[in-house]
Length: 115
Image (cartoon, rainbow, N blue to C red; front, side, top):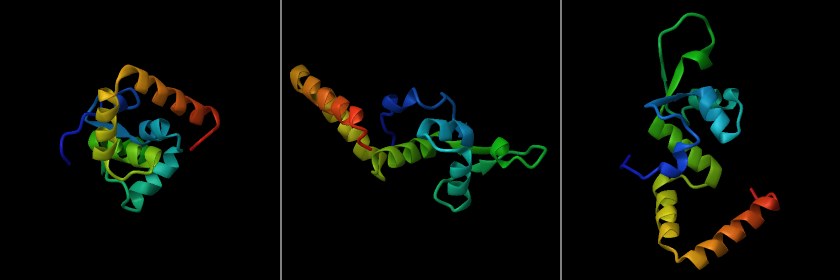
Protein backbone atom coordinates (compact mmCIF):
# COMPACT_ATOMS: atom_id res chain seq x y z
CA UNK A 1 0.00 0.00 0.00
CA UNK A 2 1.43 3.44 -0.88
CA UNK A 3 2.31 5.85 1.88
CA UNK A 4 -0.76 7.87 2.81
CA UNK A 5 -1.20 10.89 5.03
CA UNK A 6 -3.21 9.49 7.90
CA UNK A 7 -2.89 12.16 10.57
CA UNK A 8 -6.68 12.38 10.67
CA UNK A 9 -6.77 8.74 11.85
CA UNK A 10 -3.90 8.91 14.32
CA UNK A 11 -6.07 10.03 17.23
CA UNK A 12 -8.17 6.87 16.88
CA UNK A 13 -5.35 4.33 16.86
CA UNK A 14 -2.27 3.90 19.04
CA UNK A 15 1.06 5.14 17.71
CA UNK A 16 2.55 1.68 17.17
CA UNK A 17 3.26 -0.62 14.26
CA UNK A 18 0.29 -2.81 15.20
CA UNK A 19 -3.00 -2.77 17.13
CA UNK A 20 -4.98 -5.40 18.97
CA UNK A 21 -8.43 -6.55 17.93
CA UNK A 22 -9.85 -4.77 20.99
CA UNK A 23 -8.17 -1.47 20.07
CA UNK A 24 -9.42 -1.61 16.48
CA UNK A 25 -12.89 -2.58 17.67
CA UNK A 26 -12.98 0.46 19.95
CA UNK A 27 -11.92 2.78 17.12
CA UNK A 28 -14.55 1.34 14.76
CA UNK A 29 -17.34 1.05 17.30
CA UNK A 30 -17.54 -2.74 16.91
CA UNK A 31 -17.06 -5.59 19.32
CA UNK A 32 -13.72 -7.38 19.47
CA UNK A 33 -15.59 -10.52 18.35
CA UNK A 34 -16.62 -8.74 15.12
CA UNK A 35 -12.98 -7.86 14.41
CA UNK A 36 -11.87 -11.41 15.17
CA UNK A 37 -14.56 -12.74 12.80
CA UNK A 38 -13.24 -10.45 10.06
CA UNK A 39 -9.75 -11.84 10.68
CA UNK A 40 -10.97 -15.45 10.67
CA UNK A 41 -12.87 -14.93 7.40
CA UNK A 42 -9.85 -13.34 5.72
CA UNK A 43 -11.36 -9.86 5.34
CA UNK A 44 -8.76 -8.42 7.71
CA UNK A 45 -5.10 -9.37 7.81
CA UNK A 46 -3.50 -10.11 11.15
CA UNK A 47 -0.86 -12.25 12.80
CA UNK A 48 -0.69 -14.25 16.01
CA UNK A 49 1.95 -13.71 18.66
CA UNK A 50 2.98 -16.56 20.92
CA UNK A 51 1.27 -16.63 24.27
CA UNK A 52 -0.38 -18.81 26.83
CA UNK A 53 -4.06 -19.48 27.07
CA UNK A 54 -6.83 -19.62 24.51
CA UNK A 55 -7.86 -15.95 24.39
CA UNK A 56 -7.29 -15.31 20.69
CA UNK A 57 -7.96 -11.59 21.02
CA UNK A 58 -5.04 -11.24 23.45
CA UNK A 59 -2.60 -12.72 20.97
CA UNK A 60 -3.82 -11.26 17.67
CA UNK A 61 -2.04 -8.23 16.20
CA UNK A 62 -3.16 -6.20 13.20
CA UNK A 63 -0.58 -4.15 11.28
CA UNK A 64 -1.34 -0.42 11.62
CA UNK A 65 -1.73 0.15 7.86
CA UNK A 66 -4.23 -2.71 7.65
CA UNK A 67 -6.09 -1.31 10.67
CA UNK A 68 -6.25 2.17 9.07
CA UNK A 69 -7.59 0.75 5.80
CA UNK A 70 -10.21 -1.29 7.70
CA UNK A 71 -11.21 1.75 9.76
CA UNK A 72 -11.60 3.90 6.64
CA UNK A 73 -13.54 1.30 4.68
CA UNK A 74 -15.93 0.60 7.55
CA UNK A 75 -16.48 4.23 8.54
CA UNK A 76 -16.85 5.67 5.03
CA UNK A 77 -17.98 2.78 2.87
CA UNK A 78 -14.93 3.41 0.69
CA UNK A 79 -12.49 0.58 0.14
CA UNK A 80 -9.55 2.83 -0.62
CA UNK A 81 -7.62 4.82 1.96
CA UNK A 82 -6.26 6.93 -0.91
CA UNK A 83 -9.75 8.24 -1.72
CA UNK A 84 -10.19 9.45 1.84
CA UNK A 85 -6.68 10.93 1.80
CA UNK A 86 -7.50 12.81 -1.41
CA UNK A 87 -10.69 14.10 0.20
CA UNK A 88 -8.71 15.30 3.23
CA UNK A 89 -6.22 17.07 0.93
CA UNK A 90 -9.07 18.71 -0.98
CA UNK A 91 -10.59 19.95 2.28
CA UNK A 92 -7.23 21.42 3.29
CA UNK A 93 -7.18 23.50 0.08
CA UNK A 94 -10.67 24.98 0.52
CA UNK A 95 -11.00 28.68 1.36
CA UNK A 96 -11.94 29.19 4.98
CA UNK A 97 -15.57 30.31 4.33
CA UNK A 98 -16.24 27.27 2.14
CA UNK A 99 -14.58 24.97 4.66
CA UNK A 100 -16.83 26.45 7.37
CA UNK A 101 -19.88 25.70 5.19
CA UNK A 102 -18.71 22.10 4.66
CA UNK A 103 -18.13 21.78 8.42
CA UNK A 104 -21.63 23.11 9.17
CA UNK A 105 -23.20 20.63 6.74
CA UNK A 106 -21.22 17.73 8.22
CA UNK A 107 -22.28 18.77 11.73
CA UNK A 108 -25.91 18.93 10.57
CA UNK A 109 -25.66 15.41 9.12
CA UNK A 110 -24.14 14.11 12.35
CA UNK A 111 -26.91 15.69 14.45
CA UNK A 112 -29.50 14.01 12.23
CA UNK A 113 -27.84 10.65 12.80
CA UNK A 114 -26.67 10.22 9.22
CA UNK A 115 -24.58 7.05 8.93
